[in-house]
Length: 183
Image 1 (spheres, rainbow, N blue to C red):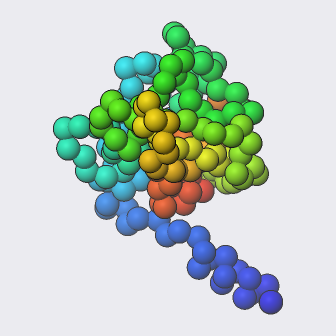
Image 2 (image 1 turned 60 degrees about the vertical axis):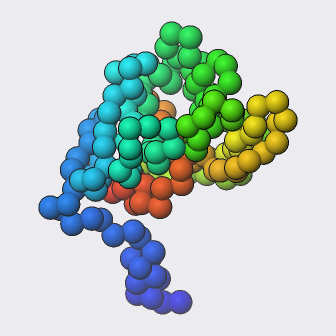
């Protein structure tokens, strides 16, 4: 393949940025992201250092709403009764059973059956490289322990900036949004 052919292939594979009139910016941990205007940003009450970005319209019930999280130094270190982030395991800061992210009922929990990531490498976040991992997760029924849904949790970790991006919904636009981040 020629250099020109490789460049055309690379450009065709790079997700396109949304039109500027249909976007808004999110600033977090020294990073600025340009996201679709329809995405909703909110601080979690656990810490001012944790943003949740909902990527679709949701009803009154926030469970089951596709989203990703931006967490900073306070959450990465651990806050209150939450565990801190470690690079050798998936981000699951709770100390108890986590409810299934895809369900609004209380009959289902969430677990990560392996401490080995499916993917372990580096991905761009603007001009920087993030440690990137994908973890296999599953929702299960309490009592029977039967798996009812499998999912992949993606994580981009930037240790110098003390920023972690967590996507348990496999949002197809997020990798492109992060690749276009500004610092």
